[in-house]
Image 1 (cartoon, protein in one colour):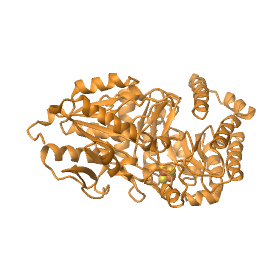
Image 2 (tube, protein in one colour):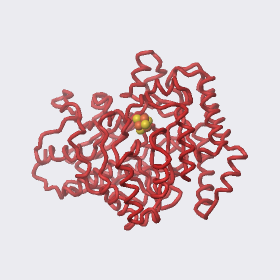
Image 3 (cartoon, helix red, strand yellow):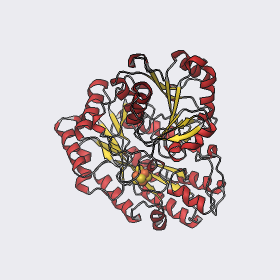
Image 4 (tube, protein in one colour):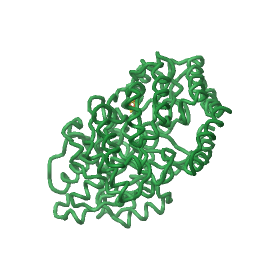
Length: 495
Ligand code: SF4
């Protein structure tokens, strides 16, 4: 490879090419369940942003190329990329768009001259599960497996330009033979080695406004943990790149440095921590105490993902005092059999108990629900939907997302469906939540009707009156108006 190039001359592009579809905008990166959405929401890719910052610190030039967030056309994007002429192009992919990425790789290779062919890298949960597939069906050069894109990309660049050995976790071709450097390992990667994210480099403003996780804007994303300290739900696509037992977090000091940078230098008003589940225990107590001590609780609101049954009233009260506002929970189902089969390790009764504690602490909980589990009957689904309606009627949740469960390659749920002949298709294009993939006793239309009836059913008079009575400021009015619009757009996602 081009060992004579100095690091300053090596341009690395972290790219999200436009993915044109009548279904809407793709939700990639740390969205554990892929969706096309009509809501216009965009998500900041946190780990790729660490990769960009880390590589820049090592002296490489970075091009942050998120054409999805920039909303530019495919042709404009491709021309711009060719003009930039990067040596390495990195693409994060997911199951429903992997075939599109194979075609894009073909287009990139065809548009770059023979002399300046870039090295193309694919990363993400799908290619971690099926690394050979992309090498077989596309001209990608390297498959990066596991979720530590930052450490792994730094190693790959060092390998290509400084002849360092390749770390375990890469798949590539050698004389037309598919080879790999061994199973990826996360345990030697100390997250605190990473610099805080360079927000200008990673164009933070593109992601600061259009996201329903923010009531106060501009907003920003962080991830203080990788990824979830439970990490064993059988449907969760990110357990493929961050298997259970591999959970690590940044130190509280590092997390506070991220928060202070966003508040002091970018005037960010709300931060969403997109760790699969936020670290708890002494880590969370220390974070809350420091947020209060440093006065950050008066300057910024914080949101996060959490599990039912993980925290008590005192802990939620402390979070509320420390500036937390928005907490997301995966309810998934109200059938204990389902929670057990998906290895959620939760009790149905925990949901209402936890939501009561959360509301007592004046926090705003959001719940996510899935239908279409292969073992659930219509009666089981209705039980979940009725429970969700009751939760809203009692004012125990402020917002909700309902989706159809999709078995992604690499997850135990996919294997279960494969072993039991329950997959309706293995055309990855169809794994986008727009149609059921798992054989169940209900037709697709029946499943969609149920999801839509739930979205419509939660908007009852009690809910509306409670929302109006909860208005305290102009932020609340704007947020509610925006939420109403996104809600209608969301219904379109399931039409
Ligand atoms: S709780 Fe389950 S679904 Fe949520 S991030 Fe952890 S493993 Fe994934």
